[in-house]
Length: 114
Image (cartoon, rainbow, N blue to C red; front, side, top):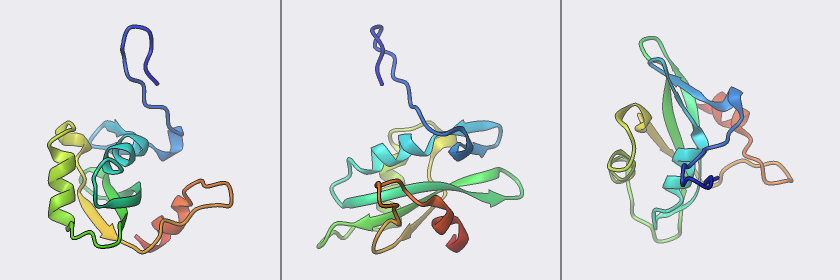
């Protein structure tokens, strides 16, 4: 949300925060940004384990029909708009983002296949 002073707050579940080299990255921020790309129909971002960094931000993308974006396109799109520690380190294209009946992203299914 945006407060009366114009400060933007990203609200996300604490356990979903990605810990990258001592920084905390909110998946919701990257997801909201990715959804502004014309080629992206839906997406989810999770942290994948990394020995050096702790976790790396990885995006799962469901493309719009007829979309031709590739991993490089989407990584560049995000890189141009976020701090270096928030940049995507991996992108995987899938047909559909797994969600519960209430529409919540089922990140555990993405982690088990990541």
